[in-house]
Image (cartoon, rainbow, N blue to C red):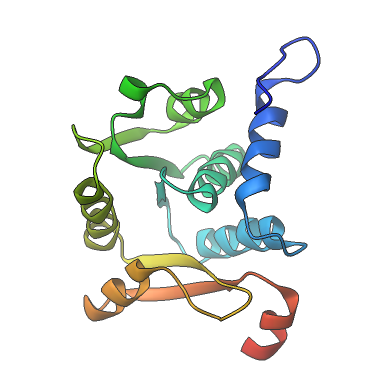
Length: 168
């Protein structure tokens, strides 16, 4: 794994490259995520709770921080299943944590239960769940079913432009 070389690459560029390597590979997904979040701002959503345990959640945190420059009323909460600082995390993740208004650590233990608690927290605290759908199958994260059962609004971002055409 390549580490950050401050002489050749700043932290923001490094973070974008690393996150992009884990996002759905379909062209345009990151732009669709940003556009979807901006549309939510137009619909008067002003608090974004971002899942710090997955690439799309970290991308959403970056996008929310960027949107806050345009819409200063936005607040960003970054949620992790456990204290990632205790096990070590990349400098760009720490930068995202410093940019967030609220950082929530769900558990002190790095275990499967912490991940389940994180998803449950996201569903309980949010009024809308923004989720990426899988390009190959159209499936979404288990938290989507949990959100639907809890009566929360769910908006899925198609991971590919083919899926966007099917959704229209």
